[in-house]
Length: 142
Image 1 (tube, rainbow, N blue to C red):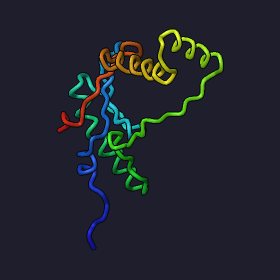
Image 2 (image 1 turned 90 degrees about the vertical axis):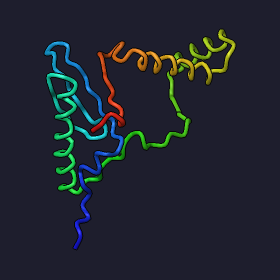
Image 3 (image 1 turned 45 degrees about the vertical axis):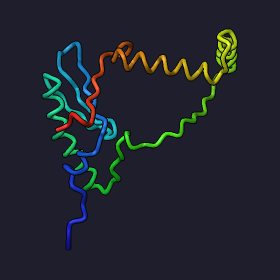
């Protein structure tokens, strides 16, 4: 009977989100696959951390498969509708509405612009506020 168990190497060819974070105190780097909770590796360089992450990911997948757990889909494959429901405190809602009115725009456009500016700052300056973060795209793997 053929083995129906998924191959970890095949799974890892999917565009999973790999992130490498430098530790300013130790000079080392920590690598993670965001979709795999607890899948972490460390190295003295970005390259070493990333290389060790491959082995950690294979071990993580083997353990998850042994336990019969569902392997998460890559974040890149998630479909987003473009609609978000946000609950705000009344005071923040009022302040945002007043700011939108001063800018002669809708509240929706004001919030969209505020989010885009915040996300854009992080994209243009990784780690600007929370420490440096280096994302490794799926195309640079292997």
